[in-house]
Length: 303
Image (cartoon, rainbow, N blue to C red):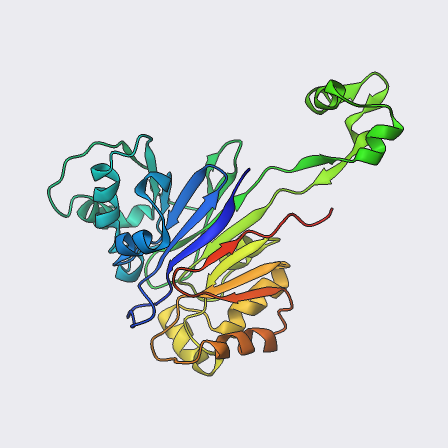
C-alpha cells in the first residue's frame, strides 16, 4: 500500500528554541523520500522521527541560509556511512554552488554513494517520471530561493456500476485500462477522471507570483509564516510571509490542507498563527507544524 505523508523534523526559523529545531522536512511519496531544507540538527531529528538515511532519494534545498542548509553536511555523511544502496539527487540554487560544495565536503569521509548534483537555475521541470513531476519556481528573498512542487499525473478511477452496466469484468478490466477500449466500450464509458495529487513546499519568500503558482490547486501546501500580521513590514523587509499572507495565498489557490511553519522565536503562542490564518479567510484543513509531527497527504478529492 502506498504511503504519502509529510514528516516534520524542525519548525524554527533563524534561531532554534527549546521546542523547535531548525528546519527539516521529509516527504514520503509512495516508495520515495524527499528531504527538504536540512537545517542544523536534522540528522538527530531524523533519528527521533524514525527517518533513516535509506529513506532519502532526493534532497531539495530552497536557499543557502543556515537554518535551511547547515544540516546538509551531516546528512550527506550519514547517507555514505549507511551505504545507501541507491543514488541520491540534490537540487539547490545554482548560484549557491560554492556553499553546496563546502557543505558536501565540510570534513573528510569515505564516499560510498552516488550523490547526483542537479542545481536549479530557473523556473521549470526538474524531474519527470511515473511517481510525480517535480518543478521549481523562483521566490522573493534576499538570496536566491526556489520553492518546489510535486504533481502526480492525472488518471482515471474505474466505477463498479459502469463496469457492470457494460459487462466488463475480470481480466477485461485491466485490459480496458491498458488499451483504452474493449470492443465498443471505451475507457470513458466505465471510468471518471481522477486528478493527480499536488504538493508544494514554499519557504523563505515575500508575496510573489512564484509562491502563488506553486500553491495552485494543492492538496497539501507547506509554507513559511515567520511573522504574525502585526509585523508585516518586518516580514517584507526580511523577505518573509506573515500568517495572514500565507493563508491568503492558500485561500486564493484552493489549497485543501495548509501547513504553516518556520516560526520566529519572538512568538510564544502557536495558536495565534492559527487564529490569524482563519481570520484571513482560509477555511480548509489547517495545521500549525510542530517538530516530529506526521501529516498525511489528504485523500484524493472526488472529481
